Image (cartoon, rainbow, N blue to C red; front, side, top):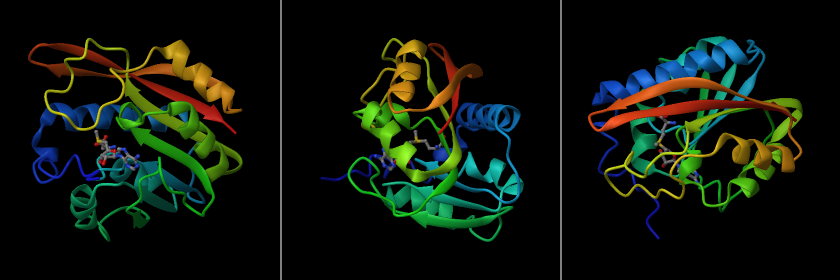
Length: 200
Ligand SMILES: C[S@@+](CC[C@H](N)C(=O)[O-])C[C@H]1O[C@@H](n2cnc3c(N)ncnc32)[C@H](O)[C@@H]1O
């Protein structure tokens, strides 16, 4: 099965100003809501071309980028060595495979709506974290189904905030909290984006 839904989009991915400013707002929200420091090793789940991690990099020691898409990873590779921290890139489908490492935190932007079973993914996040590890997961609020104009493997038209908080709590996360992170402006409407933070 070809899981590289972003093959045709990767090269031009960062040419969309609305996309870039959305991820910049998400990064700012993560910086405001998470205690980040230079000893931390983070995982960025669904790292894509690195729009999120490049903004977080100067604040941490290392980021492991996890993405199933070879074409998105190839774009990210071009940034290696120019980021504010050490970078590892793993070409992994995190729904199917495991990563044998522990992280101090997991960040993610605009990826959970591509994950079929978010309950299982939160359980995986929990296992991947060291004691007192944190998550900061950002994605769309429930939307009308018109956010995506192409099939990039979308399983959820955004999320109801109570439902995604409950999924995180069921996976044993504590101090689950949700804030507004961004608004994506598209020609046909505006789409709000949340940031969920929680502790192991
Ligand atoms: C919409 S893009 C977001 C990229 C980046 N986080 C950003 O905000 O610009 C979603 C990314 O998640 C990746 N992805 C989706 N499902 C995945 C999975 N199960 N395991 C790893 N990566 C996944 C896709 O390949 C894609 O690069």
